[in-house]
Amino acid sequence: MDKLLHCECGFEVRDDDEGQFVARVQRHARDVHGMQLSAEEVLQLAFRAELDEAVWQQRLGDQTAGDEP
Image (cartoon, rainbow, N blue to C red; front, side):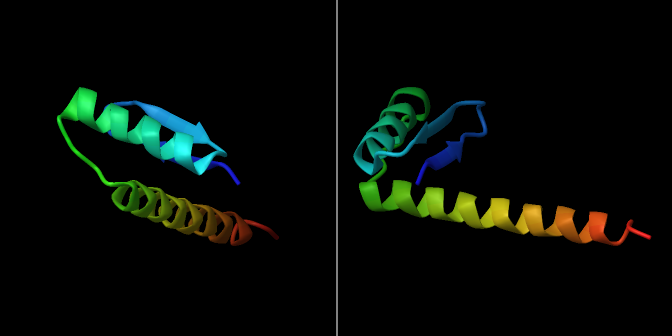
């Protein structure tokens, strides 16, 4: 399953290989933002992003369901 993360600076990473995903996020965080992230921290960020996306999708679905006759 693809992991996806959007950075506030506009950077986006998507990869179905967890190791590659973590490495790409760590490299971006270090090179662009001067942050050192552990693999666990990267995966926690990705998990939170998945939860946030699920909540938004549910809210959008709830809103459009209320519009049906």
